[in-house]
Amino acid sequence: MNSYFLYKHTNQINGKVYIGITNDISRRWRNQGIEYKPHSSNTSRFWNAIQKYGWNNFKHEILINNLTSQEACKKEIEYIAKYDSTNRLKGYNIASGGNGGRIWKEHPRGMLGKHQTKFEIESHRLLLSDPHKNPMLNGKTVWGRTHPHPRGMLGKHQTEHHRLVMSKQVGNKNPNSKGLKVIFPNNTIRTWPTMKAFVDEYGFYKVYELVKSGKPYNVDLRKIKKKDREKCSYFMGCIFKHQ
Image 1: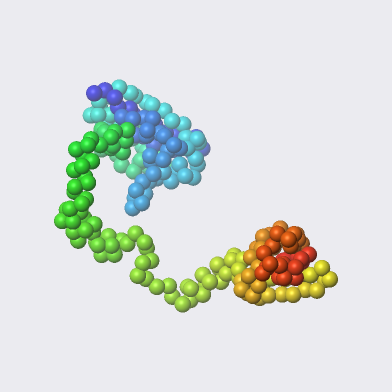
Image 2: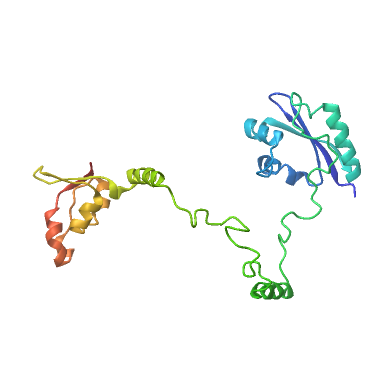
């Protein structure tokens, strides 16, 4: 089937080129070159260049189309040699070509746009319900032994030093850990070491909103429950601030 492309990407800043082949050009060139991103264990000169210069700083050309897979592989070898693109000074290819490139013989996401049949659904359900066949139940998958634990730190403990560092970092951002200053209408000032200490003493949770707004506390005492009227009256007109 003659559906393969030989293409070239040219860096418009330094002139370096990348030669490749594919049978799905729109997918290969999609989303700012994301298809060139290597697996985490690998590296790619071309992907690094995309990250450095940006996809839009490359000229993207189809050199030859309507090739068979065998013809495409041969042309890839020929053009990589022609442009000397495995030379770091001239290009981004890391091999001499001919290995088939990124060829999509079937959709890489398999079931995309398809639906399982009733038989497939039932078969899958039966498979997972059988503890002897389900890998999560038959001992083939043991988190922390056969596979890394998905919850990372489960079973591990932070060092005392690390806990102290984290406590300081979180504490500085936690409003409960910040000091509180209350300015009364007669200019008297009272302070508490933390917002939490104030709330524990008075149960006055409105303080968080008042600190953010910076406005004096004012409320219609007739709408306040009798048991709370005394403390609300005490703080009437007060301004609440962080120390």
